Image: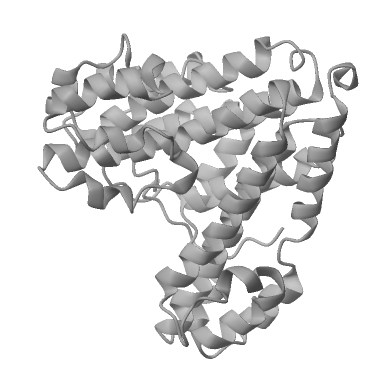
Length: 366
């Protein structure tokens, strides 16, 4: 039982996370937000939940400033949880930050390739993907120096070794690099939750395995859809698929051979969740670049495949809280809070553009 390994301090942390979960905006809160006429009205409605973080905003702030402040709350709460985590939970939370580190490093690689001032790019990096030695990367004057710095100075070194060289960073599409790193990261995270003492054989293993398998499958499907009409070969596409998941290995083999969205539909037919999602979108359209994860498909209700993936992700996150003594609720809470930030940003943008009729289409309430 996980309780054998679940120390008192981590039990305290779980109580904090459940409190954060209960403090998420409710359907009534969202109803009030949709009635707002200005961004100041939105700020007022968010006061009880975000007051301290919104206090420094000027009157009628920009939607980007509002979004930054709501993200600041997520970061502050995450760092507080992380500071109190011990043992396997502390290591688990480190893994949660690696995904953001990958995006940050990809941003810095892009800046270096285009000879931009990487110090300016630091301000655009996601704060949960920040690590102490990140400013060291800004010292690099070329891609080889940056590559060597990444291998020495960041926790992402294992995801580069054996997969990418500095020549790859110079020549490959940045989204292929990002997806290669993310593939290695997901496989490592999956290994961790299935092999780490104190996690193996526990509810954490059960919940996180399902969540990570879904993430692996989502990326495999999106990579395939977004590869159509690009120069990415089928062999190179297959290298980007994580080597686990509900679709692996038969489904991902079929995905690697797919030539259109109908081929994707056939590849996922064995998994009812994905088959139903594809059917709901009507299998229309394609497009986007590798790794944008948009899916490029819209259904009769205006929902894209990625919208349906988000709904599935929210369902899995809510279910995680039905388990006791599990690290997975930290992962789930982060996903729920990120969706809340997206919801608030979307509402604010619709109000700012005087298009309130669009609000209800993309709000996920949990």
